[in-house]
Length: 177
Ligand SMILES: Cc1cc2nc3c(=O)[nH]c(=O)nc-3n(C[C@H](O)[C@H](O)[C@H](O)COP(=O)(O)O)c2cc1C
Image 1 (cartoon, rainbow, N blue to C red):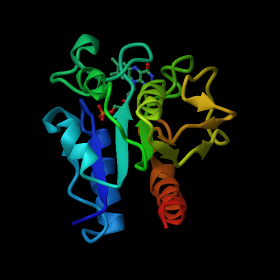
Image 2: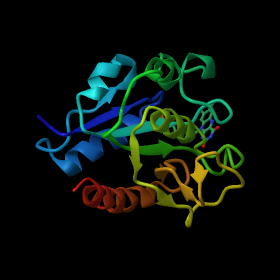
Image 3: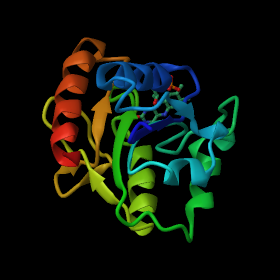
């Protein structure tokens, strides 16, 4: 069985497309087929030793979900289900999509909520990413001067996405050995 589970939330498809690119790059021997988080259970996530989790940010710095006007349930509804579950020994890498020009004060904030919840569940967070190369005012996703995971901006820096993804996946492969 593939050792890396790839789960994403999305409303307009960008985060799903990146998830597909991730599994294509890693190959099916390493990464499982991406699953929309609205169709996943906590047990599905616990079935993997390593997780790559993708989220866009909606509303004003919020998780995607029904309260931010998304068409379906998403991370907003899933995250509370994690409470009390033990992810000790699991490695978790987060990637986030956002719009730095449109939302400079809430840029990719949703990533922080995933980071915080999985950390509380005992997971080892991997895949922090430099803030250089982005122009924004504030982001909850910056912890200790780095983003908690890979940040992609399909509205303003789409052309940088393939290279960013390639570098990040190479870094991850080193982290999970
Ligand atoms: C109504 C709305 C609110 C948004 N709010 C934020 C935000 O607070 N912060 C941010 O970085 N991006 C924000 N975005 C940008 C999205 O995160 C971005 O378009 C992302 O690529 C969408 O991903 P998806 O296609 O997977 O749904 C917002 C977009 C929309 C349409």
